[in-house]
View 1 (cartoon, helix red, strand yellow):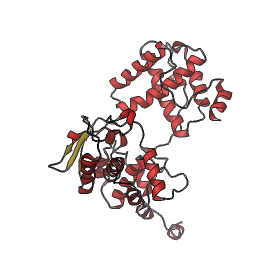
View 2 (cartoon, rainbow, N blue to C red):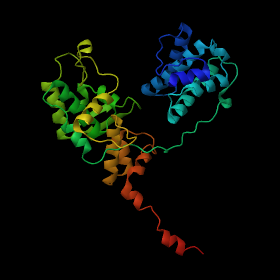
View 3 (spheres, rainbow, N blue to C red):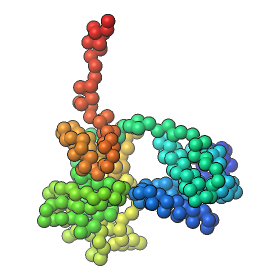
Length: 327
């Protein structure tokens, strides 16, 4: 229905996902050059992939309406975004941000002759507007208890959830974790973050370490791979894990019979949010939490302040005192 609604606006069927398949040779070349342009400006690989995915969809739209890249106008971008009924408000702002960058890139390489960036609308995504989803105390333990640790896949899944819940590692960093990143002697995990490229060193708690050891000894396929966690499916046996692990987590949530509140996010990233919330409740300084989560921006951790209810209570005003002090 969303695709049909988008067709009514733009006259073009826009798929939810936008791989390069279906794009002409020139469009593919431009998207690759755009990725290189972003890399030269210091963007992380995961951020570049996100921008490229949005641009791929836009390039397919241009192909369908028979619009050449050098003739792109601000109206083309606005029409495309209006047609993306599958985008949330935050996704719309992110897409607008990406396409502004793309327009600047086309201007820099002399494909566009007119600067259309100032003509584009401003995004309406407000900093810290969203409230992060965190798990209630005890629910993460229920999810972990629901994992069948007697099977190879169960051992793998348990170790992965432990890394996300106890250390706050991003899913992509868990999938990219190499055997050499685990310093068993000093009980630490030393790796580089995919999102920022920055090195990070985290303590390895005993329970997390034993979960990894259990998988390596009794669950991991006997393959020559540098990665800790590998695929168990026949068509990708022993290869590095890719994609999303949210479906796996959802399975264990159902098995644990954990009830979700309306609108609660329950992907792997929610475990990271929950860890930050628990550290905040334990009065761990924001700078320390930022280091644990690998957040470079000083204010990136501020979004978690809104879920510390007890600290927020201290900020509340007593209405009676306010009225008494009114002159």
